[in-house]
Amino acid sequence: MKHFLSVYDLSPRDVDEIFQLAAKMKKELKEGVKHPLLSGKVLAMIFTKPSTRTRVSFEVGMHQLGGHALFLNSNDIQLGRGEPISDTAKVLSRYVDGIMIRTFKQSDVEELAKYSSVPVINGLTDLMHPCQAMADLFTVLEYKGKLKGLKMAYVGDGNNVANSLLHACAKVGMDIAVATPPGFECDEKIAAEAKSDAEKSGARITITHNPEEAVDNADVVYTDTWVSMGQEAEKEKRVAIFKDYQVNERLFSLAKEDAIFLHCLPAYRGYEVTGEVIDGPRSAVIDEAENRMHVQKAIMAILMG
Ligand code: CP
Ligand code: NVA
Image (cartoon, rainbow, N blue to C red; front, top):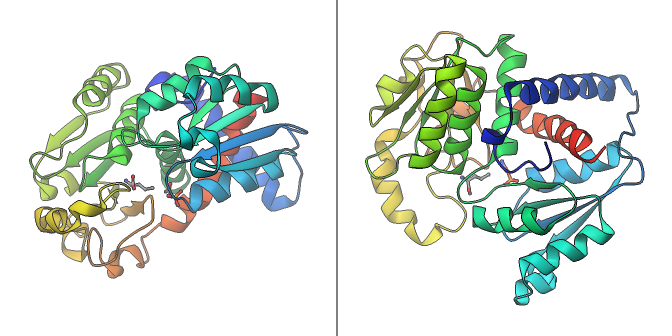
């Protein structure tokens, strides 16, 4: 592992290693045991989109690892005025030990990695959200004790989060059913990559337009916003298209009795999910958000240590 750009790039062993280290550091943190694996190291964090969880979990995570994180709003650095990504990558590589970036185009993240001599971590693009999917499966593992043979249902927009969940479930042998409205399916190339991994891992992948079919017998029900960052102008249109894809009590009741609910957050109650479900007893969204930090610490320790 040189960079962390996509879950597809990982081997099942890499995933296992990340989860084991994350679990160890989570336990140590609760016990007050320090783990300064990145003592004196610095992470640059470039953001061209807003963030609560990603920013805070990386920044606090670096602090807990004995290092430091630098928040770089793209509007405040020369990148926002047209400095090439390649120059930014080469220069930052002389100062820092790792770069995390949240931006629009996946190709910009790949360009940054190409010219960077330090590890690059994808903190969300329009196409993927790999740190999120890793934290999500880690959360499922904590709740269910295993991943193989379980079923995740993703209902809603076939967006960055859905794409990375496809990659992640296929990698570890967890079944995944994705239900989206026609025209809002997951990325075709990512679905093909997931299918090829699923052949090796034994995961079953279902792509459907029917939310009931997806949720049937699921162990995990997942949804995300209908309006991702950058799509604000399409809000009205999207709300009309997605209205039958809401995760509410009726839909959630079709999953297994002990199914848990996940959402990457931020959530919009009354749209993709009802308050009853996301604030209900089987919602694991706050644990899921916490786990972003533990899993990302493991990713950083492995890449930058
Ligand atoms: N889930 C997630 O990435 O949240 P933020 O946008 O707050 O970072
Ligand atoms: N799909 C959402 C995820 C936010 C964490 C977005 O891209 O805005």
